[in-house]
Image (cartoon, rainbow, N blue to C red; front, side, top):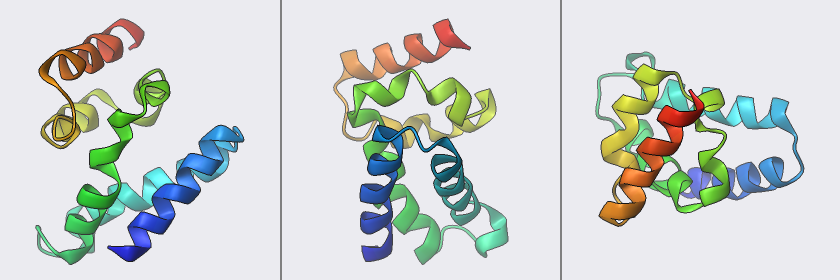
Length: 103
């Protein structure tokens, strides 16, 4: 969990600096953590990536515009329950509209 907290901070820095290759690396690592390749799910790796990384991405509205580049439609839909965790109903609906409009 501590690792993903630190990685999330570094992810924020990479986005702010427009270091898109770094951003992609973080996203690939997170995707691996929540895949069967990391072991039988759920596991400690997937839980840490979800709780300390994915749940917090939609809290930063600036990131919403990037979601269609960062997540395929199927990835986005699979992550919707996770994305909803810290959002109001209105913000959650807006995240979905934003993704649909940009995709």
